[in-house]
Image 1: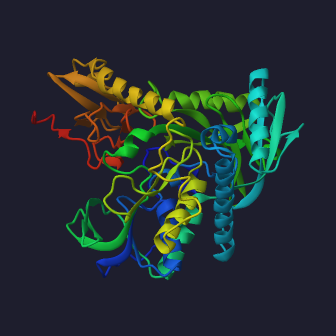
Image 2: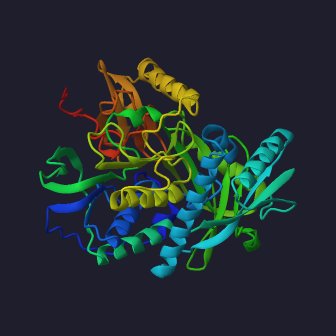
Image 3: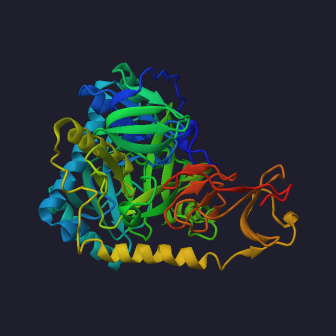
Length: 512
């Protein structure tokens, strides 16, 4: 299976995508869904079960984005602490968000049971531990808030890992699974119910005509639907949500341990900044330890590859490691106020376009919740979670400082990255596998030399908002530090919000 990075994730390596029918014999649907990650596939399945006729359109292949790069923790204790959600949204809404997370986890479990999916699903406990006095104070706030929203949590003297700690809490009814094996099963069920699919097809335009949506794809075909769902991780183009989302990269490594008894059955989290997260994964009776962390803003780290060095050293400090078997990174988007944006796409003329984005580090839970909310809105016209997660919500206090900070960060990179360009006197100065933004023959170019010594040159100006992309030396991609668009070494678009690839240079012919 393919994903949006050069490194192979554990999930890719332990799943084989089965054939599916890609025969689309009609142009008229109830709903067109853009994106075939967990959000899009689950939404399509729920709508087909409700009697709607759906088409899923995917620019690449199934699970190409974060679904194949996740660590696949299934949390009801969210990345945004409930003490923050209580402060930002009030206790009643914080309780509602906890109930929403619980419902999403239950939906995943029900699918596993209903469709008899073999995807290593397991209910388990979660543990969070502190290592100093400051972390203990923060842990106390988190503990109190978890109790306040009605989840089960206790202090504990023991955690299922060898890490040193000063205090720890245990919260029940969390989960873990294999996301691609789960996704594959949902695709099969979606097709059994008559749902259509098109891979390697890019949506180029959406227009409203006679109170319906006309969806145009890259081969010129038009599809018509009552509703359109953007299940694209981040919505394409520039709009209100552009300024309310911040892109981040997170790093995951897989380890074989010398002691088989050290693999934890439960989920573990520390309280460092950025924090680390631990879980066991099992495939064909073989265990590995997955550890993630080292999160940073997309395109804003001088040496992404070095994050694996730091992460490995951290793990070896606590575990007896036999070998490192996997290492990859993946992208997520933070919202400004701590909850995702799910529902009607703000700024559109009618309530016929839907969006789901800003999942933070809880992508598997919020993708499933998004499917529930959006399918309810389409089928029933309402959802109990509609107001809380509304993409058009206006919170004059909650998230305002983050809104200012993130957009100042964007402006800074838009200007300063143009002033920090390396000069290269000879193309031979570039090592194989290396990419740089360089000044070459009076041109600013993004230059990459592949393993064979072939040079690929791109215009480094992002096609989304004009920021200068930066080279990601571990995933071999050009990453935008402003809004997270990512491009392959040859300039092809990997992920939005840009809608087209980078312009390229022909060095042999001096093409302008």
